[in-house]
Length: 459
Ligand SMILES: Cc1cc2nc3c(=O)[nH]c(=O)nc-3n(C[C@H](O)[C@H](O)[C@H](O)COP(=O)(O)OP(=O)(O)OC[C@H]3O[C@@H](n4cnc5c(N)ncnc54)[C@H](O)[C@@H]3O)c2cc1C
Image (cartoon, rainbow, N blue to C red):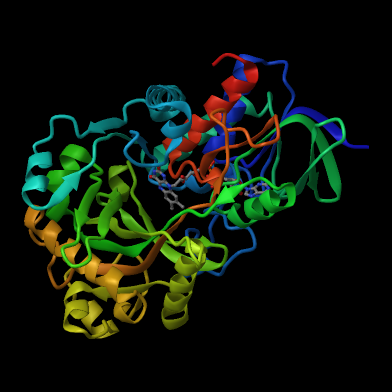
């Protein structure tokens, strides 16, 4: 006999959490069950962070990517309020609505421990002009920076509010979803099942393969998405401080003169640290920073990424990115680090050169040669971009600037959805990064609120 719920939510990342939050707020009588493959927030512990191991040991349930809070739980907590990047939610629900929902989410975060954190904005910034004068383009956004520590507090407070109103099933990966004869959704997990009138799927990037197989099984149309490939740059924080003090995160785009490819900065972490990221067993690089002054470092890091989109005859953009990441793992046993000067001179960085570098790495990565990993076209674009950034932040192209590779942003394939974020099955919704529509905390959270309001009929 199947268990019953009004609404099943699969995944307790920002998308799933905000859907649950809004549903029980709008209709407390609803029985909402949330399935989460990972652990509750308090039990999420990466063995690297607890000092048990030095590098990623590929745990069966990655504590960084999975559990209450999803991939965003230990992130820098940067909530970008913008339609310029972070996803294409606005294409489904409209620009005004998307911004309104992102602001609404910000309000909830503020009411749950985020108050006092800074909201940065590009509006009226003189850097726009400086960027344009140097063939760079600064994208518009307001950025709430919660910081890794506050982000954790906010998630904890939201969980405390929800835990008695919503049923959370942790450490419960959903195997599949079936459609029953009476048009309900049967969630299949650990030899058990639950039938729900409606089902919201919010499985994020870590659930991309699962999502693909479910779409195949239920004949839900999908299309391929892009993959972003590049490096994480780490340099002394003072080099970028004039930008980061005013804007915190600047999303800057450069069009290369050689190939006219777009290279962009991504996920800037002033006084932050570089970290490993494990996606489906492949170790890539990422970064974050803390709001707590005691945990700040002397370095700033950010990614430089080039987007690649394959459609015909090869369609597997993510597979391409994975192969490049695997190559770096094969050569470096994980993430590779190289001094910019060594890269330009065509030589690998070794322990000796790294130890002599004036930039102290915040991640224990293997010194090596990124030119053996990254395709020439991508590498050329990154080198051009470093020199372009050097014009607005002199010192970026210093020999000792560190490049970690590879950073890959995998995007889920796009699930075909209506303007209600509903699949071709009425009552089956796909939200957040798992839908391919969002790629950020703010957009994923907003998509959760949107679907909750759709279901409650209060849009
Ligand atoms: C290190 C890091 C730093 C980041 N920093 C930022 C940042 O500063 N700003 C920003 O905007 N974005 C950032 N991001 C991206 C951001 O975290 C994601 O865009 C966001 O978390 C997406 O939310 P989501 O709910 O769609 O998916 P996720 O957060 O990925 O959550 C999906 C959840 O679903 C669960 N799940 C998957 N499959 C199943 C299954 N079959 N059954 C049950 N549960 C399942 C997973 O365990 C996971 O907890 C960062 C990401 C990382 C990894």
